[in-house]
Image 1 (cartoon, helix red, strand yellow):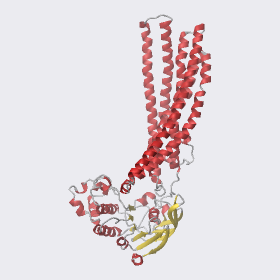
Image 2: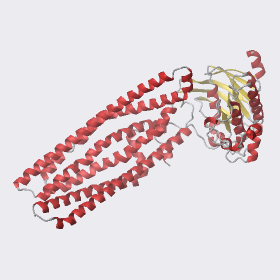
Image 3: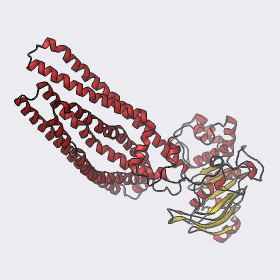
Image 4: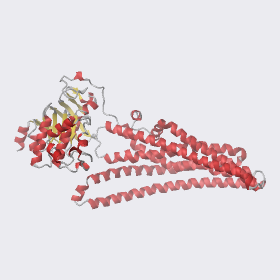
Length: 585
C-alpha cells in the first residue's frame, strides 16, 4: 500500500513534508504515544501539588508523619503511574517508527526491483547504506522528534494555565523566557543540520569505497596495494570521526544553551516566589507548587531541543531516500495477450508470450547517465532458434546490449521488438519468466546442490532435475559426491571446480526451460576438457531456444550461427562465425 503511495512522490519533494507523510499510516500509534506522554505530564502536575501539600502540612501545620502517609502513598502511586505512562509512550512511538521503517524499506526494495540495474553501477555501496543505516535514521525522527514537537506545544501551555491563577508574576517570567529556547534551538540547529547532512553524504561515499575495496581485495593483495588502501581507509575514517565530533560539539553547545535559559528562568521564578513568601503575599503551598512546576514547564522545550538532532538525522536520511522513491518507473503498458503473437504456443503455456523469441533492434541507443559508455544506433536481428555471438573489445557495449535485449534497461531512443511486439508492451513478469542469464561467474549460495538448482524453478520434480543434470553432463559428478544432490556447497559454490560450476549453472538454465538465454563468457578460464564439456552442453541447451553468447574465444564463436561485432558502442558488422574466424585468423 505504501509502495503505491510512494509512486506519486516527486524527486524534489521536501524531506520534512515527506517524513510527515510517512506518519499518516501510523496515526494510531503516534496519537497513543503523545496521549500517554501528555497523561504523564498531567501526573507531574498532580504530583507537584501533592508534594507541596505535604510540605505545607509538615512545615507550617506541624502534622506528624502518620497522617501524611496517605499523601505520600499517593505520591508513590503517581510516580509509578508516570513510569507506566513513559513506558507506554516510548513503546507506541518505537512501534510506529518500526512500522514506518519497514514500510519505507519495503517501498525502496520494490522500487529498486522496478528500476533497471543498468545505470545503477557504482551505487551498490551507497544504496546499501541508504536501505540500512539511512532507513534506520528515520526512527529517531518519528519516535523522538515528532512526539516532542507536539508535547512542546501542549505541556508548557497546560503548566502555564495551572500556574497563572496561583502566581501571575512567575507566569510572565515563564512566558517571556520560553521563546528563547526554540529560537536558539533553531539558530544552532541550522548549523548542525548542515554539518549533519555533510556527514551523511560522507558516510554514503565511505560505504561505496569500502565495498569496492572488499570486492577488489584479491587484486589489491596481488599488486601489494592492500596496506596502502588500508591506510587510506584509516585516514578517511579519521576524517569522518573528526566531522562527527564537530557535529557533537555543536549539539552539546545547543544542549548547554537550552539548560542555561531554563535554569535562569527557574532561578528567576524562585527569587520572585521567595520575595513573595517573605512578604506574606503567597502561601507556601502555592509557592512550592509553582516552584516545582517551573522546571517541568521548560522540560518539554529542552527535550525538543535535544530531539532536534534526531530531526536532522531524519532529514538527511530522507534527502537520500526521496530521489530513489521518486525515480520514474520504466514505461509499463497493459499486458499484451497471446493473440498478438503469430507463432504458436510452444513452451510453458505463458500468457503474453508465445513461441521462440526473435528480437529485432531498431536504431537502439543507450548511455549511462546520458554521457558515458553504452551503445548507439544499433539495428540488428537476433534470430530465433539460433546462437548469436556478441564480440568486441572491452567497453564496446556488449553487456549493455545484452541487458537491453533482456529488457533490464530501456533504450533512450529506438525500439526493441520481440516476435513483432514492442518489448515495453510485454507483461514484464511474463517476459522475465522466459529469460535466463548466466554471468561469467555464476553465483551459488551456501546451500545444497538441489537448492541451488531449484532457484529458477522451485516446483521442479526429481525427473526434471535428472534430465537437466544429464543435459549438462553432470550426472557422473553428482553421483561421485557422498551425499549426491544433498551435498552442501560453500560460499560461491565452494566444493566444485570452475568447470563443474559452469555446467551446474547451465543445468539450472535447462531446468528453467527459458526461451531466451544469455551467456557471458561461458568458457572463460576453463581448460580444454572442461571447455569442450561446457560447449557441448551449450549446444544442447540452444536447441529450441534463442541464445546470445558474449565471448572472445574462437572455440565458443565457432559454435554460433551469427556473430555481431561491436566497436565503441556501435555495430561494426553482422556476419557468420565461419567468415568472422577466417578474417581474424
